Figure 1 (cartoon, rainbow, N blue to C red):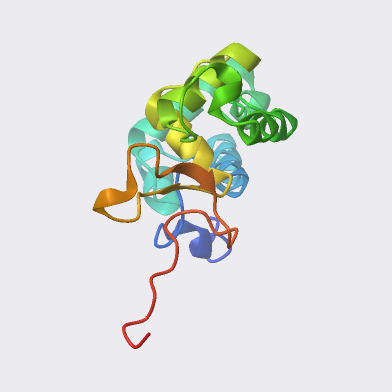
Figure 2: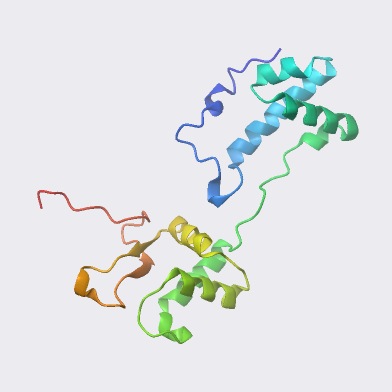
Length: 182
């Protein structure tokens, strides 16, 4: 019987992002799950019962049943990790190109004003790279690459104030709040 001591630290979800890059598992989680499946294969070969394997590996009996069926039909290779569920739609090189396009400003695309909105960025991505994103997908893409929404600074800021821009501190997200003592 295998010990969970070598995989116990990975079993915790606390503080861990389950779906990196907006979808799929991290490489570490894929490797962990593949190791679990391969431990199950060793136990299949010894003739152990699905319920015992599931309890010991802390997975559902249904998962063990699927793994056993795949193993019986296609062998151990059927349980190898298939890699990430999907690739990012824009490569790092394409995102750098997108940043260069955004640096040209909305006027280069015929929009009035200096403000980049998610809808405008979505249109640039579609025109330039022939890739479709939802507005929320664009938001996640931009935040993941250190961009943030800068809200207009006050009521009289005007319609063109605000918009998406590269975070100056490189963190992405909201800028740090000033302390109350300032």
